[in-house]
Amino acid sequence: MEATASCYIEHAKEMNAIARSILKPYLPPKKGVVNGLSGKISLGLSLQAGELAGKGMLRALGLSVDQIKKQHARHNLLDLCRHVQSEIEARPEKELEIFRNFLLWTPIIDDVLFGSTLGEYLVKHFSKGASAQPRSYFYPDLPEFTGPKPFHALLIMIDHLINLAEQLTKLLCPKETVDC
Image (cartoon, rainbow, N blue to C red; front, side, top):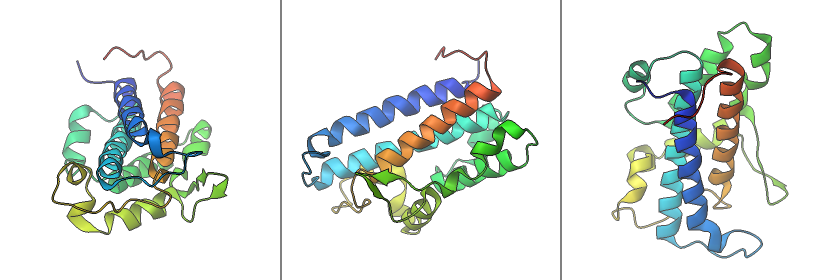
C-alpha cells in the first residue's frame, strides 16, 4: 500500500516536533544563543519535515509515491515547493485559491515580520549548494551553523507548510485517514 498524504504529513509533524524539542532551551522568551550542533540538527530535521509536507501535498494532488520519488530524488525543498505550486496553479478548483501563492507567505517571528517570504528564504538557503541539503546538517564536516536569523525561523516556516499540507489534504482527500 502506498503512503497517503496524511502519512507524509504525520511524519512531517513528528519530525518538526523533534526539531522544536532540540531548540526548546533556546526559544523565546529565553532568547538564548543556539549552539552550532543543536542548530544544525534542528535545521536538517525541519528541512526534511518540509520535504515530507510537500510530498504530502503532491500525494493529495494525485501524484503517486513513485512519481514523487522519481521527480524529487534530490531532496530539494525549493524544487518540491515549486512543483506543488505549479500543480495547484494547474487545477481549476476555486477552493484551491488560498494555496496558489503559498511561497509568497511571509512569517511573523517574535512579533516581527521576517525579512523574506518562504520562497525567497528557500532560494537563498539552497543557493549555498550541496552543503544546504537537509542531510548535510547531520554530519560534523559542517562546523558552522548557517541557519536563518532568528534561528527558529525555519521551524516556524515549516510549521506553516505542514499546516497548509493538512488543509489541502482535508480539502482534496476528506475521507483519508492516518494509517501509517
